[in-house]
Length: 195
Length: 195
DNA sequence: GATTGTATTGAACGGGCGTTCAGATACTCT
DNA sequence: AGAGTATCTGAACGCCCGTTCAATACAATC
Image (cartoon, rainbow over all chains, first blue to last red):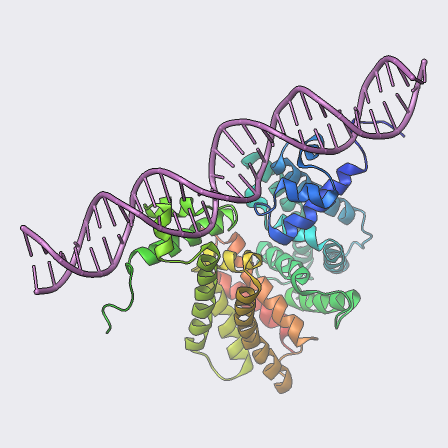
């Protein structure tokens, strides 16, 4: 469609975000300098400011992009209508999606504290949105009698914490395939909440 | 016993560690300066170096102290011999102990990356030790037929991730008491792994 | 080849960093 | 009172920080 939408290169921008994502995830936001990011891209530090107004906004954009992508991908995910099928879809989706983006996952629950209040609230709202997706499944299942978790809200947080933990230990080419990991976690989640 | 064991105040040292713990947990290791820590204690920056050789060692000491305390407390915890009773004791212990030290918990899985290789390995070994405690319970229970988790190692990591997550949302004086939270998590864990 | 407009450099700004240390201070014991 | 020691200050060191901006290189159009 529009060929020339904005100023600035449409190649360098993404490269800066990719470099920042990698470095922030590895060393932490505060420990990474703009000069390091620029060096990773192969550019001088001043050039970064053609693509971002400041360092915090660079972080915010990464987090926002990650959350938007997460929510959009979940909305596009095929799933059934029964609570049990929807829960299985959620568990497998969360693991698969997060294993594809370990750096972004790491960042988004590690570096929220480096955001100003407004930016923080924006990301927090998206996170809440995502949690609500799971909570709705658990609530529907509780009403239908499929699930018997003692507390829907806590089950939501417990399941997400458990699933997100996969990114901290999973290594490509290790003992288990992604699908097998999905099977194992789905087994545990199903038994934890089913009536 | 020994009244004069080392040089330096036995009051200021702990105050420095407490201030560092609080600030590191709130803002991140790299974002906190030695001058900020000193100001929190009510002292000039140079005085900190009577108590720590450098900033990284200050972080390491906090993490090491936390892990040692965790392992010692678990070893001192009363528990039964049957796998089910031991698992219940572990779940309730982990939640209770971590809720008492949210800053240290936050630090110890957030700031490992700021340690040099040797210090990193030392903390990692302690963490492994702790995970092994839970894994042994699950293994014994699997052998005895009490548990039916599809993969003991993964169940270990999943349970710890789930339990540790409590510290990210629990607020004192909120909807649920600590004991109630323990009940709810124990219910989910038991159902997730029991045959 | 000159013109134009964007992309980038490279130096500079003020400031904060971790760390050191000579000297001031406060405490304890005789 | 005076000596001796434990504790801390305050200034300094060299270095790196995020950010700005005039000057420049470059690519495309006339």
